[in-house]
Length: 78
Image 1: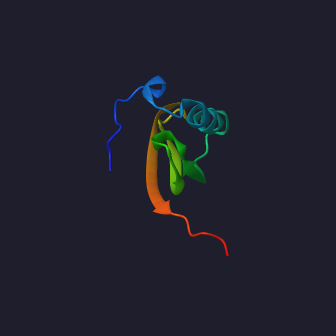
Image 2: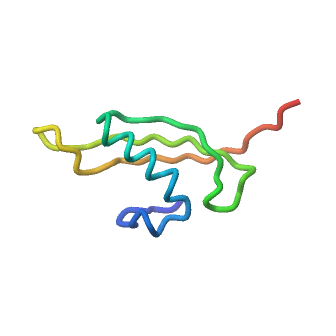
């Protein structure tokens, strides 16, 4: 596992898809859950679960996003 705390979005290989999810989270002020391919490590055969949760102040301003990611090997379909 790798701690990406403090990493800027433009330093991340799959910034476009991550940015879309963050924009959705900020627009709707709701968390999200997704399953995606691990393209950003060039490991397309591995998928990952990702959860993004908005964190904020008492006024409802989002000032942080808590992100959790768990990779897993996808089983081939018969």
